[in-house]
Length: 345
Image (tube, rainbow, N blue to C red):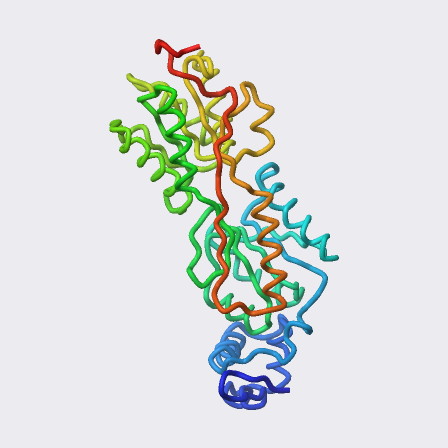
């Protein structure tokens, strides 16, 4: 068996000789078998990548009826929007979706790649900030494409991805509060090492600066995107000597936590404090008051990622595909002018 690389042909026998292993070991590596040492597997895959090896008819051999969707964790609300989007497109193409939970928000666990080699999906959709170069090379050697859904990071320029406009989302949420008359506006966002957290806060800062409003450092809080994080930070903000009259939360779940903190503090939303969320998950329409939020098109992000990975399984584009979807503000009942202003309700 051999394969063409640009300008040359490489045989597996040559790779085996250079690696000092048998052809059967090369076959085990290519087929994702577990009975190969990590050192040998790395040596073989490095040689295959260096020699530009891609299986002849690799896409046809690797193709199955599966798209693999990989999360670092499953949130019962937020994750379902992405799953729904990927499944919708998969069904349109007669494919099924296999769901994997692995690693942390930065990357899947090392043993994940071994399972992928065995499952041979048509392609992989990853909800991670990045994919390590060695993983990319292993996938490339098997002609398995991947796409990163990017609501939570900033992938390398050569990583196919689907993301959304986080900076403009933070900008429009804060401008909405400023236009209502708020001047003391706080921001609660996610982890400080995630690009989406930083981008949303940068949008907040830009809106405040352009309006000539001061930003108290105590008003910006980094945490996580969960309810408990929003509750804890909002409780501290509302206990300040001069508490904010409005809070921009980096996720709807954080906003729900902020709603609870306001209730416990005896404050009314939006009469005493306005709250804006981010994502526009279905829960935003069911809480009381209904949540003003930034719509992040999570389902469509899943759909576009699935379409892209299917296309990449059939063709190699000249440039790395990257798509950033627009965000929009959805105004509901959790925001109003601050108490005491002429326009206050």
